[in-house]
Image (cartoon, rainbow, N blue to C red; front, side, top):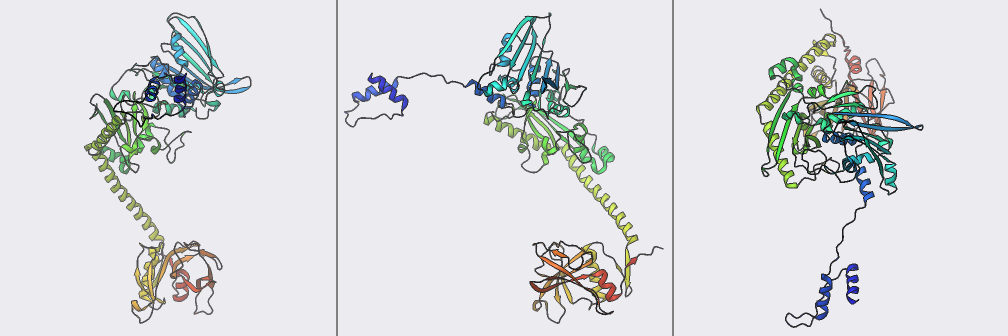
Length: 601
């Protein structure tokens, strides 16, 4: 009884062994020996699994509802089905619209044990089968995110029909849903399986449109695998018959990820596409081998470098200007770069392995396959892989990337980009020449003291006109220009006209504007004057500077024929007025300079 009490105490509390202070050599007290003997008695326990929670966790672990497509295709291919039918529709169930997924194949079918594996969690019959895609016994649990699953399968002259009802409802009531099945004789040699999932994804079905489904199949499932690029022919004759919710006629999809044809020679590209030539460039690099520090682990890689027009040519889901992309479309940045694959199926993008910053990765349509990747339960990540192996793979990927950048083929792309830039510059200059020539023929001009003056169209034109006037009529403006620089916020530094040197004078700045509007992109604080060609601002209108400070434009009409219209910006809280020279009016009234269209002879 004493030992039992001690055991009970040990189970419930953390015990620290105590040693008596009176001992002789190696002699241990009788009480301590008894405690040690009691502590050596052990209890064996097997951890329990909350089965309901595990079923719910796995069913909910598939965050993307489209993953049902991936799992269905993987199961059918593991069953050696070369003809798969995927239909998505809405059925009427006693007046209620229910979303239905139908998966049908001509695979080898299931027997009774395989049926149990289909519904069980973690009880896969494929464990240890290196040719199988799925082996965890998790994938078909994505079907449990539904109201009902009906199944009919044929194998060994037997037909099994199974039904599981109220699946998600039962799981939320902490009940593992049960299924019922019957076994009957079937026609000789009849094989295949049909699965019907009703009320899938809580009856939410907006993403199950045909274009979205097809894109997912060709990028995220075994049917979008990259096998064929390595001359693997196992699945060449496989096909899927697909019908999304929004179409009436099904489409046949053939096996294999879509890769474009490589482009022609650089000269032909440039002759055909001129400055767009880099966007039509396409070149592939294939490399296979073993990892540097794990020579028993094989890899296969293919890196395509593709211009944007190459991508647009085979991928209708890419958004771009002037093109109405289907629902579910994406940008090149969203989809392209480096993909890690297992079973040649794209699993996870790792663009940071090849590009540390920027969008250089968008040139790449690249895949690195390794069967030693360990995937998470939902097959969405390779992060379960042994870290040392993952690091070695990353290093190998970087080596491949660097070798491509240093290759002669990639140098062709650099050459094309340089030529395109030069061609683009020439084209821009030609367009600018034509524009300027057309404008010059219509430009308004004036003549003053035998010198032609040109009506400005840009701020630089205002500066040129101001410089001409300062030389032709030195007393026209009450300031002297001492510096001009458009690289900073201040255009012109001026000082008042007097006999003082610059270091003795007060320095102001003047801002040039071709056209003055109500938003002034500088500060009023150190502003002396504004010189503009024209304005449509009315007397009493407010102008706001870059700091949000406001001034009111005041227009004072001339008092006499020899006077001129005066413009200034006023602030009641500041006695300083900012003078505005509107050259179009100022020159006409002060110097009788009037600009007229050029006469063409």
